[in-house]
Length: 595
Image (tube, rainbow, N blue to C red; front, top):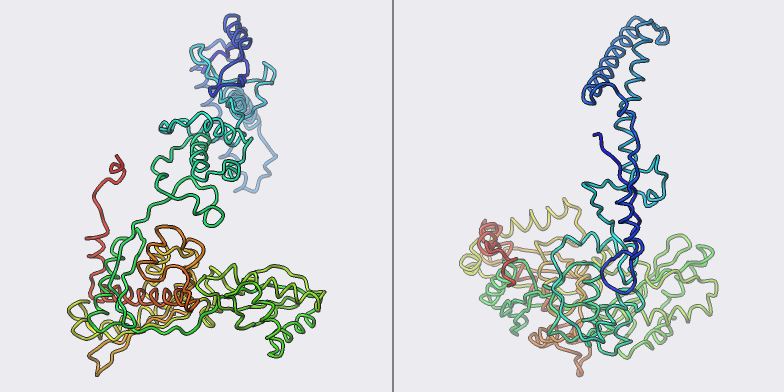
């Protein structure tokens, strides 16, 4: 505890021009001089004590706790006897004085030293404090460890802190770059060239991604070596799918099927990392095939967008509502709306009021595209047109969440969004017993108690199914759909009923909001395009615009039907846990497989 404080070391500064942190030559000389002529250590009060340090500490520690214990007992007795606390005896006065004296000693010996050392470690201004109150970084055996300094490339303080925190991470295994690329990397790291502008400045998307990848590793101090880079067409995503790419993620694609749907066979591509999912869907396809196939019906096809506008009064908002919902005005609004695209066709307008705010839900067909951008442009055309007659209309947002996109909503569950599909099949009793390993009665009872009653008990919204989102997500990822739209696209109610005198099983899925497209977005990427081609729905249908996307929606529903049938059978037969333990668990150390 009786330490000696050495002279204050000079504050280090970075030298421009190199990646490593070095000291200025003059400061090195000054530091050496300070070590040779260190100041005399500041005297402590404990140095003047006539007794050994350990004995003095023992005395004051004992005194402090003894008098504190004595005073607490005295005050407790006074409270019990209703004696005022301020009436003290001579012994109590002596105890109070002893308590204060021992506290001051302990604070001076331990507390001040601790506070000053804490300030020296945490406050940048501690370098400038006076010697009498400055507790600089402690030096052990006259060795000085320099604090983190700014890098030679002038990183921001946040980046420098991140780099310092990552110093203990495993060393980066970076690939040597050409000299001209190395210069660009340095400019990205020091902030003189924005990372997002590399594609436009270099004109080569792959080179831009490579430079951004290297700059990212240097700035963060973290390796992304396991993230694949080669073998991807970075030009195909430029301005369409992803900004500032540094690589791509691998998701395995399995196939289930054939799915016999409406008299045609489809092999279903599923991108997933969940074991048993493809195998389970494949078993459902087998059961459907052995029973003669499934049948689907497209109930509705219309994408929606709902802007929110505001007026000065609810009366004015109501006037616009009546105007938009008047059948006599629909043809005029449809002409304005349809100018946005040769495929966009306005189908309906529905309005809802909240005070003086009006939510207008436009619904239109969008051909083979999923259609969000298409319907948004049509809505903007109509709003611009309405501004002439309703000049006091204030457009708050092109989307007011009455659409509703990428959120569970009753309006989609009731009215539908995208493609509304129902798919059904009759599974024979023999197939239920031999392929699905259960019985018709067990499936009907489980569906009622799990998918219907259980979901109602949970207050589910569109979730009256076993795991439709599993299949929807897997097919969406494989075919280039927007994975976030899995939220409403997975709305599904699964129904099971015994038919043919209770021998066979009628199973159906009703999905009101399947949002898919075969053109635009991720559908044009090579791997996703290949999966669409496998299903026979790649690109736009020239003979019947929209036919490919509608067919894809029915295939999604048929796949969900197969997945629901298989999972429900596994649960009814008690096979779920056993199959997952068998197929969805690996004893291999995956971290060692990379090499």
